Length: 271
Image (tube, rainbow, N blue to C red; front, top):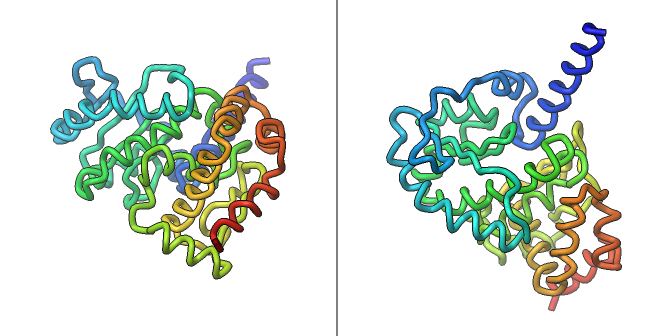
């Protein structure tokens, strides 16, 4: 029985690592290494839930000041309080950020195993507030549905589209609406799949897009949903928090198919 229990626990760890590696866009080996990294060396500032490494206290102080408004923005737009206290880890280098989060060094923020990691790149590029809110959107969902379920049930276009939308553009700053619209009308576009995947998530590269273009296009669709189906969108998010299957939740909340609403959205781009 003990051996069987160890096998089950190991399987759970493997599935979790696959899920978080999918979500952060990192390799399985890198995610496995990050999964076993202790964050005990990080110091919490003022019992705020913001932790920092040596050399990153100044960034932590800034983050602490931004955090209350960032949390409020998520809870209002995603229509639910955070289930657990938010934990944010401010890393002192791109290398350290990658080590703990499993994300590429070029990334500015990532949610990994229930923790939100911020790279100094977010400060260096003057995007800390946008990235903080963007990643909090992901963390908010993680708290309600879990890492594995977030990856397997919710497709990347909605994960990222919602995060960019609620943050006011965080993660897609280099791609304008006009550039994204032009790309979509030329046929260089994502199409909204109806579920996530642990093994083969349909991210930007699946559609032949660069990440920020994928993020911007996805956020434009979410923005369309918010502007034209605000109540339905909130109901949809609530159903996802209740662990309903993505496509089923969409059909129930909108009383329309994803494909049908997508056609409506594309039609607005030509007018």
